[in-house]
Amino acid sequence: MIKDTLKKIKGFVINLSHKSLFGKISLTVTISCCATYLLVLVVFLIPHFGVVSQAWLYLFMDYVKIDDVDTNLLFNKALQGLQSSLLDSSVSISEGIIDSVLESIDDPHTKYLTPQSYGNYTDHISGSFKGIGVWIAVDNDENLVVIAPIPGSPANTAGIKAGDHILEIDGQPTKGITTLEAGGLIRGEIGTEVELLILRDNQITEIISVSRAEVEVPSVTAEEIEEDIVYVKLYSFSSNSGSEFIEVVDRFLDAETVGIIVDIRDNPGGVVRECVQITSQFLAEGDDVLHQVDGNFKIQNTDSSIRSELEIKPDVRVAILQNDRSASASEIFAGALQDLRQNSAIIGTSSFGKGSVNYIRELMDGSALIITFSYWTTPNGRYIAESKIMPDIAVDDEEALMDAALSYIKNI
Image 1 (cartoon, rainbow, N blue to C red):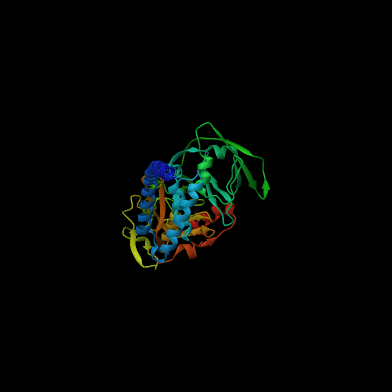
Image 2 (image 1 turned 60 degrees about the horizontal axis):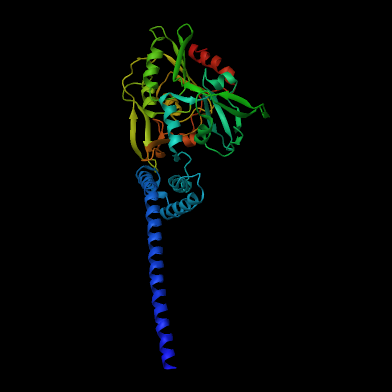
């Protein structure tokens, strides 16, 4: 009996040692798998966290009202963005985190651009891109609106008009999307087509199919519309607008010029440096063009006019045509002349009202942040986001604008 008991004990110990060995092997394998998974996860996440860290640093360096931002809220939003992006394969981790963080900042002009959106943005600033050629905006009801088709573009040829609402792009509803997202949907390879569902005059038109092409964005055009009166259309302030403005306008100026009409209707703005160069042509060297102010509206920097190459005489009358889609750098130009140039008048309606200066910060993965670095005021201290640029001569009917401009220049 004792012998049988000893055998049972011996068998139990042997069996226990086997189980212990199996447990050790299982534990080792489990730890190895977990360590490998964590290593892969860390390697996968490091590039994203690098981009996020870079964006976080730029935000704290540049954002005009960073002192008013709740950092705990930013951190919580970052975690929410991480969680959402891990569950949504269509959104990268860095994009999910950064977009979530920016949701907590009440600033529509501080935004994240994916690599594709940033590429589209830089193409537009450089003066050419592959697309259909429309300037677009989002109205207060989050509807996508055509500011204007670019002259000679596929959109212009297809009959797209200023004021059209784009309801769908290739069947995808546009309600609530950003202009950058819409631009990404509209642009594409040359020769391919995009279908737009248009709402015009409160009536849905047929779907308009537009073939994409290489679109050259005009910066400025000029012509003499009457004897000694020059008409200038300023489409945007792109990277070479200043030199183009001087070159094109100089062809029509002489000692007999009595008036210049500068049309900035539907001009969405652009590069501040180019705006200062163009504005300088109408002001004395050293005049203030705009003040950059911080979140407390304390002046941080002043952009002053440079030497005028066109040397427009002070007695030349300047009529500026604007509408409610004249924005940003357009408002800087109009506001400076309204404050400082005696023989000038703004004709039309109130401007859009974008009163911020934005920096573009490229991130290591080719994406970018557009950050509101400061606010700006006119030379006399008007904050445009609140006051807008109001016309000196109010004209609601755009067809009557040219007659009003000519009457002002002729002083009749």
